[in-house]
Length: 385
Image 1 (spheres, rainbow, N blue to C red):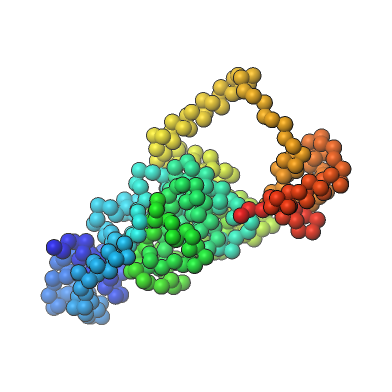
Image 2: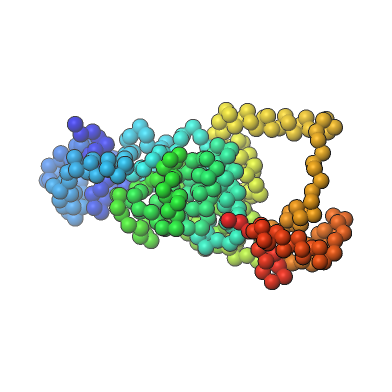
């Protein structure tokens, strides 16, 4: 027996109609089933001649049972705007998709969600921050939403999955198409705890014009949009604009003013976006403005705060940190921003650690052999896998 969702899938896939066209027809008081059974003559009074003819041809060629089997074989389901599973967050955005193809799960409405977005061609700094926020937010029980593009998107989603959390990829192609192929490792496992979502029919190949449209779904499913690294004029800005139009809060991670890849983030901050210096900044916003943290997270947060208060009140009850080795001290001074041997030596002196140049070079060489740092001439930077 056919359901309204079956008729909705047929209507949504009418060539040239799209979500706006479907909603326009339904606003005239018809159901999807009624439109399917509507006489040709009546359809031509509801649509332009071109669209009416396309819908009539589409009706003649559509096979409900065949279409149902196609999705079942691919383990994909169609969720229309009227389906109880349709995300409530998307119903409130200015231009909601009429239907979604889903492989895996949809985001849990009772859990907080953060969209992590940024540059495809990102720096070491961007990669590091994407991993840090993706992992730590996931460990805090936050769902990670992104576009599974190369760079910031894929890195943050992989970090979330590796941490045992859930992530959701919003695609500019069919949900059974992995694009780009370098994110195959994410594509293959994301449905275990999360899902792939697209408004485009399965097997639809990626096209440049499809990606800006899907960005409204990324921001729409999120409570907060976090920009990790982006140029001032980039595709990331499209998602930010859509997030602001939807009334979503935007946070940005600041970068050096000389880095062009940080221009977008620094500009957003200058225009009033929130600053995210660490995961806690994002969690505080979720806590303060969205009220979406779970009971378990509330208890863990309170427990951490009580522990901190106790530690400050009774410092003698806590053991002192073990003395750090010279190698650990040196490793701590090296980050993703290249640093010279003279700068390392100066930092050591500031900490009142006396060391000779040969001893410093010996420790740097050992850290390089261990794969913890990378040498580039007289400069060293931390390695992030």
